[in-house]
Length: 275
Image (cartoon, rainbow, N blue to C red; front, side, top):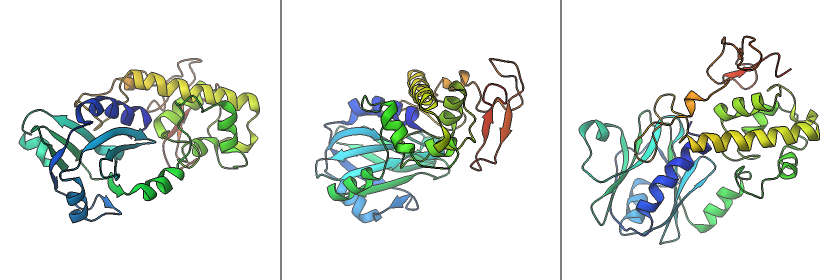
């Protein structure tokens, strides 16, 4: 967390409020989140730079700056990016990692309660290499069942683990992998190379569908995730398997099984519907 729907929700809400605006001041309050950049270089690059575009790549919020650099924020489990039209409260300041003040006085803030997320600054060449290592975006029109099958071709790992590999597919994490596999009626432990073409097609459709539905509900808030306006997501009320281990399957009524044996994460599935 956050996964594709959560980060896309954040981006859609903050992009119209940030694009075209100049950063007058940048204050980095915690340095342990930095990757591939120093505190001084980040602050110097951001100050007096213009935010030309804000978009999502996989689970990352990407700020394309007028200088050609990309600042990449990966919120991970406890992070958020919010735009404020007012001064921050003491409680809001408590977990602020990066505070950027715009020329009109507004601020956009990256908050991270446990500082599990990262901030990275890359030039054009660095960004091309970075994004080139990430798989296709599942909500783009070019993401077809054929492309999907080709990305997983030959991998002998469990299908759940395979679709969470960001090198093969962008943006899918534990929550939506569980949900998509349930909708596709596939056992999460089945080796990806043993999927039939029909199973690939079912899983492709299920991934696209669950991501779109979650996006319409502004994502899933289980604990710390907040949208770009500070609101909670609503998709947690629509989850069919994730977090429901021991409860009844919504389709057949059998008790849902929970295991950590596939990839050390919580995997929940129906032993009857997902044989």
